[in-house]
Length: 452
Image 1 (cartoon, rainbow, N blue to C red):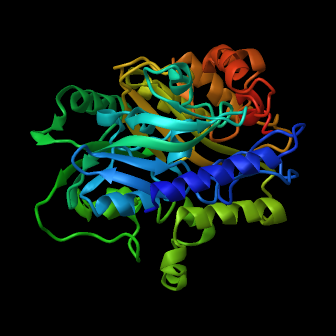
Image 2: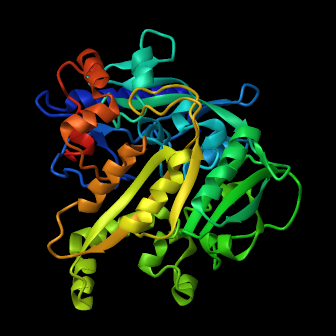
C-alpha cells in the first residue's frame, strides 16, 4: 500500500507530465499493459506518467471501503483486500485489468447479477480531465454529470486517478455447482429464478456464470461463498478449469483461486498457444500461465504473421477475428444463441447474468432488468472474398435488434449515426465542452471505432 503523501506526489507527477505534452498534441496514457482488443496508434511519443498510480491507498475495514489508485490492477487490489477479509464487489476475470479501466470501460463477473458492474461500487473518484485539472466527482456534487457519464467513456472524458469503492466480506472458500441445462430457454429460466429468489434448489447463490459448449450442453455454475472447511481443487497446475465444468458436478476453490479461475487459461483461449497440451503444460512455467502473457503472444503474432502462414499451408482462405462481449435481455438469450449458432458457430462461449441498479447514460441498460453477457473470443474461417468485418457487423446489428448493447473494449464497426444513438454521445460531447474545451482527448467514436 502507499501513503496519502505518496499518492499526492504521484498525482503531481501526473499533472507535470500533462503539462509537458505540447498543446497541439492529444493526451493519452503512457501505459505498459492493456486489456483492449483493438488496434491503436503507436506513433505518439508523449503520454501521461501514471507509474506512481498503481497501488491501494487506504482500507476502512469497518466501513468496508477502499481508496485505490486508478492504475491499480485487480490482482494487486485483491491481494491487499483479502488480507482484511474483504474483496471488491465485482472482480473482472483477468488479473491485469485495472480498477480505473474497469470503471471507464465495463467490467463484469459472476457477482454482477447480485451486485451490478464495477462502476456501481464507486463512491467518489478523482478524474484528470482533458483540461489538465483533477476534479472529485460524486453522484451528487457539482461533477455528478461527469460521474454518471464516466462508465463506458474509455478515457474520452478523462482518467480516474483515485477511486473510493465499496467492498464486500470475503469467505475462505467458494462451493461450486455446475448445473447442466438442456437448452438456452432452460438456462434463462434458472437465471430468472436466481435473480428473483437469490437461491437455487434451496441453496443461496452468491455468484453465477455459465459455459455454453453446444446448444444442448449449457452449464450454469452456481457459487456459494462459505467458510466451511473442505478439500479444494487447484487449476493453476495440470488441471484446466473450464474442462472441469463438464467433468464434475460439485467443486470447491479458495476465494483467491475462484476469483482468478478463468485467468490461468484465459478462459479456454490458452489452447491456441498449446498451453493445454499435457506435455507442454508440464514444462510451461506456472507463473507464465496467465492472461497477460497470452495477450502478448497474440500481439506478437499480429506483428509477425505466423497464423497467416499456417493458414496458407492448411489451405484456409481467410479468417475474421471475432472478439466481443455483448449484453441482451435474459428473455432474448435463447434468440441470440440460436442466431449465433447459425451465423457464427464459435464454441465455447461464456454467459454471465447482470443487473444494474440505476441508469448510466453511456451504456443505457434498463435498471432492475436482468441481462446476460455473452462473451466469445476467437477467429472464424471465412471465404477469401468475404467482406471485411462482415460477421462483426452482423453481430452488432443482431444485438441491437434484440435490445442489447455491445462492450467497446474490442473492435467496433458502427456507422457514426448508429453509434451516437446507442452510446449517448450527445451528452458526452456536452461534457467535453466543459471538461476538455481544447479537445485534448479523443472522443468515444474516434477511440473505439476509428481506433485513434
